[in-house]
Image 1: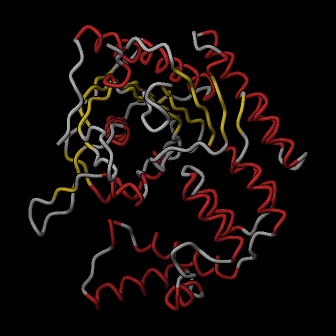
Image 2: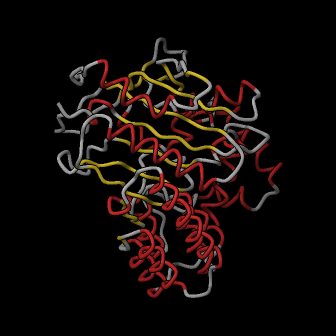
Amino acid sequence: MKLESPIPGDVYDAISAPFREGADHVLDAPVLQPLGLLLDLAGEMLRERLFVVQSTEAAPESCLRTDFTISALTAHLESGRKSGRYFYSGHVFRVAPPGSERAEEFPQVGVEVFEPGDPAAADAEIAAAAWSAARAGGRTDLSLLLGDVSLFGAVVDALGLAPPLAARLKRSAASPRKLRAELEAAVKGERPGRGGGGRLGALLAKLPEPEAVAALQEIWDLAGVEPVASRSAVEIVHRLAERSALAEAPRLSPSQADLFGAYMAISGSPEAALQSVESLVGGKAAALGAARDSWMRRIDAMVKAGVPAEAMRFSTAFGRAFGYYDGAIFEIRSAALGPDQAVGAGGRYDGLAARLGAQIATGAVGAMVRPGRAWRP
């Protein structure tokens, strides 16, 4: 397994310091993580980047730790605390892309914050902390790429698309590659790589949900199979019914497809980019005005915290590999390393707590920096 070169201890401490400040807990996340849970929450596309471990044939599959976010949120929910800030420092493990010379095991430092309050203020604070941490490694060629997963949802709502199609597109918003595939399929009236749910989906869609769930469970019992990747019968019924409905939903019109293409091409200063998004849909989405105002507060707060305004760029096509982000996102890049080797990253993921079964909503935002990339010898 390829390792990153170690960096001096004092440099590592300097990079960690902005994340340690204000943190009231230190996270000790296990190296082995449940594979099914991670794929459910982060997306199946992540599988190819994971080191999968299975101790016995009967044991559920696990994977080596690929990040700290889910572990931090799980620990916070189990604690019963209303709020908490969790600092972490440790190694993560990811399979390098084919032909890549990237390290497969490398250290990360970061913080995950679970608090009620003003999301824009918290987003700005955490992004500014990540910027300070990245700068502490000695690089002077950094830039801050910004995006917003929820912004795409506001554009979808403004177009009044059929609910199944709108829901599918929104779920893909965090991954530009997946979103482009979904948009292309929606123009053709297809679903990328899959049909509309088949005969089973069509049959279950016609039944009341309790009957559909019972029928699916009976099929599993007769066939002697277990749910895939820990998905429940209720969730699978929802997905099958949605696919069946999506197969009958209207496709995107040429004008709608053009609008989404124009949306994905927007990039520039945050204020100019957000103004371009508003111009695309006119007065159809009041949420866009609120989003612009929130972003202006974020930018102002980050500048006051030491992030240069000229270093910021907003891109509607920017997404993160982990599919659980649902709000503001960011990535810190180095001109010397290029866009494929981010120095730091983070974002908001308020909806993840509910997906883990939490009954009480909590604000959730976090960030990490890779010291091996932040350090410039």
